[in-house]
Image 1 (cartoon, rainbow, N blue to C red):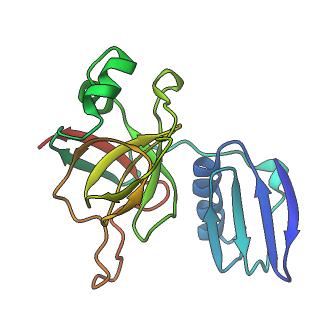
Image 2: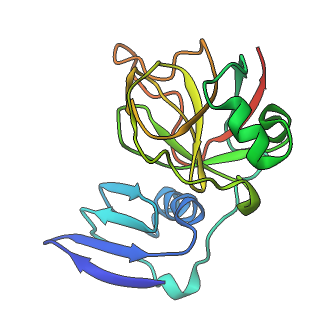
Image 3: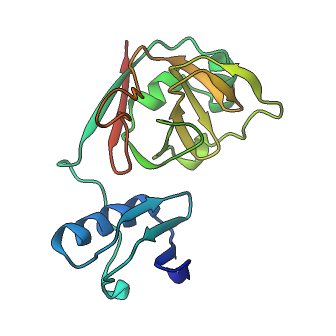
Length: 191
């Protein structure tokens, strides 16, 4: 891990396991070891914003999601435009692969409510499409590189579409608008 100052009151951590570090830092904030306004995980970093007290980071290590972490099951109809192509590349049915795994929300971004899910074994990583689609339907379940995700709203996108869900992933009228947040465990099931 590498830590460096970020602005007036921030610290940017370069880490191998952002989701694990996010969980560790949230726990440290809850115990009072860490005092900061915001903890923001990304693909290879965690930003601590508004830092007032920082523990000795060398004494901490990333936490794995536990059975006590919140878990969301996403029902999927496996009818995505790229399902057959992905099945051919993977040499197995994508639905079987995704239903057999537990994913973890590593970070959110791209669009409100879009969660980047980790946990897809390296042998199933596929590059994004060379030409992104101008429109991906909301609820689309997709894979791109090392990540799996569900498009909360219709938007452009370059990930490979495997199916769709009717589950609402982002509702701005709720106190917690995003269904998925960093650290949440995610499972896929047949709709």
